[in-house]
Length: 291
Image 1 (cartoon, one colour):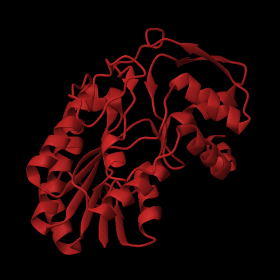
Image 2 (tube, rainbow, N blue to C red):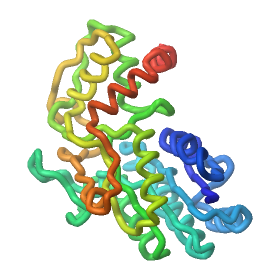
Image 3 (cartoon, rainbow, N blue to C red):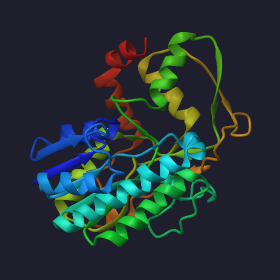
Image 4 (cartoon, rainbow, N blue to C red):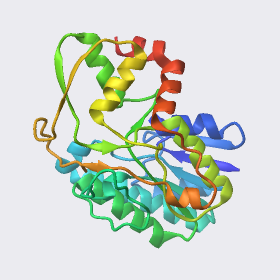
């Protein structure tokens, strides 16, 4: 199949390119090549390329900045998704869109989880834009797969793990507070890329949750990661109240891959297993990058 990947230069987009180009004709594009918020540009690009699948990995994901740059967040996250879905519909192509745990309010008590059937209720502008993108896609085409994921990390781009590594290497003895009362499922972008291919090949419509199995807190993730990296650190657990941010985050971001499992499509592993493999593959590269 011929696949267009928007956001192809980002963390997930690059892993999707690596996974999908083994068996498909893949065209990854970043915002410099294709501004997905430009409806005419999107339609012209899709008309010329004639893809069978449009995979949208593009998003404005800086959660705090979304609160102050609402127009930009809406243009990228909502209008961009809408334009890609409309162009896919005109072409008769499938659109695959990446969404987020932030469409939920996170009020469920841990360890209860969110399924695809739970009511959405975003508590941030970022979450609102991602929910509106889902609605826009559903209205624009019948051939769509929306995958909600959470706590994404990978070898490319910036993410929580690289930030923790950078802080630890800069001063291993410095006490650094890491939130210990927000829960989620850390998800390796490469494993998610393989899950996306599985859904794409199955030609399945609808909304799917796609995260690693199991859950932890940000503090547990940071210490597990640096333990596998054999990097000393002075991290200490704290509450969300101890580490305030401009945007409220869901306290519970645990998603259950219910629809993937029901359809025999789930290939996601326990987050610890993925993290160990990630460190084995990229330990030296990660250290060199953040030094």
